[in-house]
Length: 93
Image 1 (tube, rainbow, N blue to C red):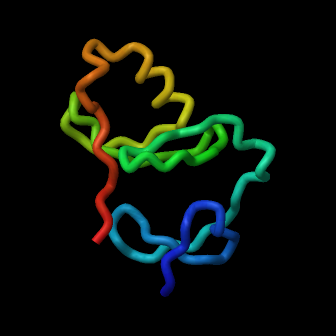
Image 2 (image 1 turned 90 degrees about the horizontal axis):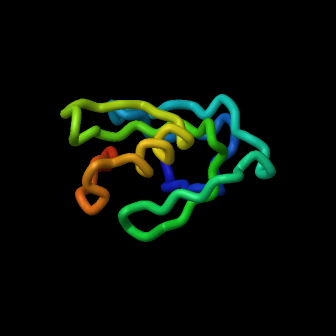
């Protein structure tokens, strides 16, 4: 299995799921639906649709959560301490 970067993902390709097992991509959104930009902790900017789902560890609640981009944005604007990172992304490898 070769590494696929964001933007190269197509239907029927396999990606790694949260548990580390390969998962088949069943559908992708048309590019014109990608109306939001997300910047990762590595500084990579990804254009996504508001309904794109992310699984990350919520450091405030001490548990993993799957949320849509629009939910992350709404919560980012209301954090009590914006300098402290709330979300920890899934680590690969």
